[in-house]
Image 1 (cartoon, helix red, strand yellow):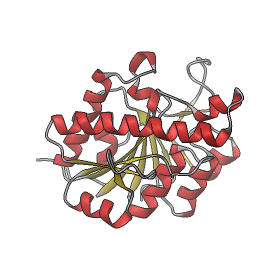
Image 2 (cartoon, one colour):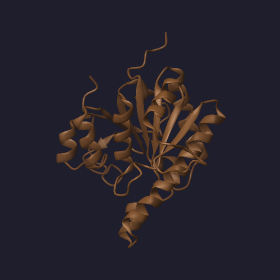
Image 3 (cartoon, rainbow, N blue to C red):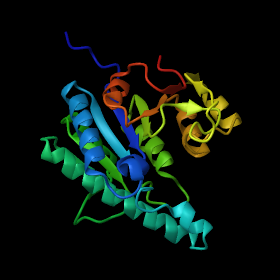
Image 4 (tube, rainbow, N blue to C red):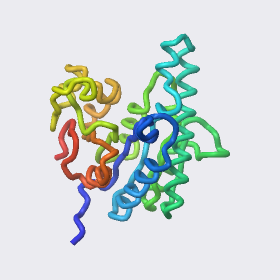
Length: 241
């Protein structure tokens, strides 16, 4: 008997570093293929999947800004990096038979549809995967905030943040072997403890709309499917009802 998914519609936020593989730079065909197959499995189980991809594997606007580049220009470059990643993911999905649409917050009709909320929802209802590219279309906002915003707009049941670590810790588990992992957190805890899960704007937006966030390791095979089905994986922020 096939287990019924807990969520009808999700936003999957994939960090750019995950797409970069072990080097965390460039686009790893192995990583993007594995992610695509898990997204396909979720759609086959009846989950409507929308995706927001970061661009940190290609360009980080904040880093460039800290080195003297104009912040707005650096952020726009970062948005273009998310478009490149989105097109790569679209190609990988369509190669395995998943109908996919890329919608960009920055108008570039030759490569992607413009972001239109109602059209995005219609694509999802037709079992197409929708990839939201270009962040929010505005500088000074992260792709985490874009994921939170799009989740509200399309009526997603949860925001799944696929990262390179297996949840939220009280300190960096890569640097601190004694770091403690949280199984559950409230939105307020994340904000008060300044845990670097998502930026404060994204967390606040989810808190105001009671949207659960699940943070998990995307590199462990099967985790995207488990998280998308609503199974216990990683760290849950907020309540899943």
